Picture 1 (tube, one colour):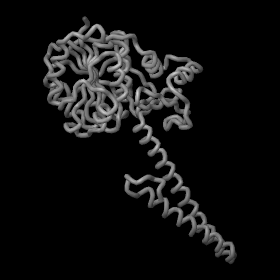
Picture 2 (cartoon, helix red, strand yellow; picture 1 turned 90 degrees about the vertical axis):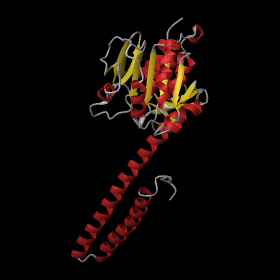
Picture 3 (cartoon, rainbow, N blue to C red; picture 1 turned 120 degrees about the horizontal axis):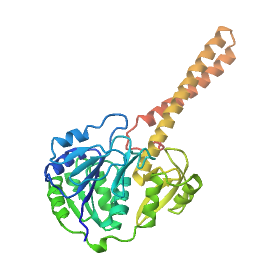
Picture 4 (cartoon, rainbow, N blue to C red; picture 1 turned 45 degrees about the vertical axis):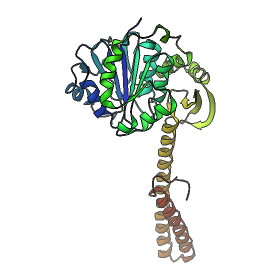
Length: 338
């Protein structure tokens, strides 16, 4: 019977505290490898390995692309790179973002699920929105063990709450209990029944994030996962396909960008806000131009033309004020209610 020797951990805001508590309770000779994705800035050096070394007796590092997996090591995804597991090695790639993030939790969990099945233990920690919900479902489908930080214990409960609402989770515990739980699970043997045939849709999604398909095949690959919708991808403006993963709805475009419902809603809201600010700028420029033209017309004693430009400026200013009120309104209000 196989050992549970692959531990994948994902989180976002507030996850560092939980992760530090987890690794501090793990033994030096842990018979497993740990892979960590925490949402980070794509442009700044990650200090996470250095911080975790202060708490852990295990080796901690950013891996290299193609590096061989070793037990007793913690591998942290580098900034702006997805980390995937592939046949005993680690793959790093600047692939399309998932849930507006790179690195993202779902690609790591999904790749672990299709390569290691019942050997995988997946852990989701504190964070905003819902990256990791689809990934932990993939681990569950291939026989792995799932652990979620108790939302009441999380600084930001959204990621744990989403995972719990959309999946059957094996263990829901406080961060302080996750380390001891991992020690126990690693010592257990995985069930031989926990390694079913890899679901074709999971393998296809890993292939998409790795850009394994040629251009015409990419569209076919996404088309086989779901149904084409009228919605557009906030990242590339391409069409989005709706994927039904049990009761879980997700969206993916043919170049590989993927969104949960919450991340798509957030991305579209940001896109709408950016468009409104751009429109506000254009209106203010039109008002300023109209007043400038009115001033020039009056200097030439063309009073009728000047009045027309002034009316246009006044009308534009009214639109500016209405739009400004929408943009600075309570963020809980929709942008289109006024």
